[in-house]
Amino acid sequence: MSELEMTDYVLIVEDDEPSLQMLSMGLSKYFQVVTARSGKEAQKIAAENMPTVALLDVQMEGMDGFELCRRIKAMDGGAAVSVIFITARDTIDDLLYGYEMGGDDYIVKPCRLAELVKKINRLSSLNQQRLDLSLSVEFARNAAFSAMTNLSEMGMMIQAVHLMSLSQSERDLGMAVIEGLACFDLQCTVDIRSGSNSMTLSQSGPATELERSIIRHLQSSGRLVEFKNCIIINYENISILIMNMPVSDHEKCGRLRDYLVMLAECFDSRVRGLQIQESYTRQRELLKKVEEIVSVFDSVDTLLKKSQASIRMRLMSSYENIERMITILPLSDKQEREVLSTFGDVVNDLIEEHADFSILQNKLSPMLKGLRDAIVHTDEAA
Image (cartoon, rainbow, N blue to C red; front, side):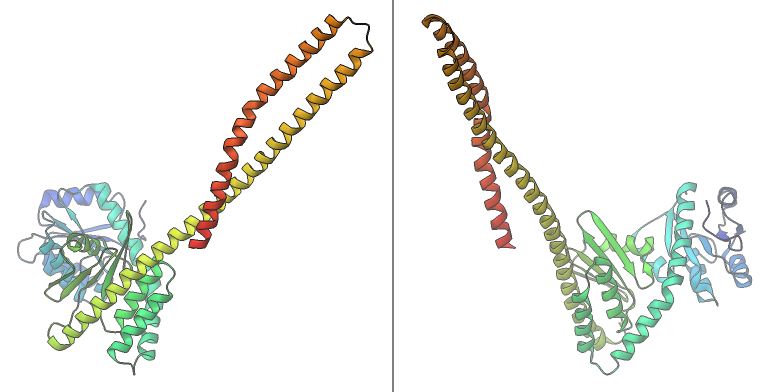
């Protein structure tokens, strides 16, 4: 089901008529659709009524999709339009250029309708999250600027590291880095990796698919990678992508680069610290469960010991009672021996059967002692 309101619409820009018709027919089942066959026509439509989402073919005659995206974003209200590029290529150069022009996502031809619908709905949801976050982010940025007006750049970096040290979750940690770098007028996207999981955040909330794709392409390219006015810093658990480095000011850019490397190293260390803290919490929970199990087995061990002692005493008492009773019965010596022998055999059989419990108890006792010692050593190490 569509997540767009009825007043919103999707603008499809494609100069190939069959492709345009196919996209329009497919998407009109889910969204209100307006079509354009050229960048010039699309620009006129957007100027009259901005779309919520724009699907732009990259390779069009005349004005291509990248240039059309730039022009739409420059219009009044155009910054809020979500742009999906329709492209036959997904090279890193195309991804970066599309991102620089203001794109949010891309889809490779031939387009699958289900995937496209999912991307449009996701961008609609993302726009709503950005809208909800915009006021709080602006407030946080203004508060940060007000508090740090008289601090030096190093002072602001120390403050950013301090905010990181107070963070108790990976999401809070990522937002602390973003807010810290916002004090330097740097727009950044951070990627936090924990095992097989990954979390990518930007100043406006969840990162776009294009931002995640750029980080995935570059996170294994080296510790520090620079291209045009962009820089990405990679560590084992994190990546920081900056898209607006002040490359025209070489001195400032050099200082910021040094600060960014220092911040990224602290960021990575803090992520490792949170992972260790989470692992320790899980170990403590596991240890608590082991202690409960040891307590149960302690009770079983005690019951086994008491049961064995009680059975032996009762059997021996019964045997002695039989002996006394036989002496008053009119039995011959042979009959007395047969009765005592028969009962003695029964007693011995019962004792042999309970010998299995003795073997189990003899194995269980040292195991329990070993577990108790291990728990004590774990507590001491903690």
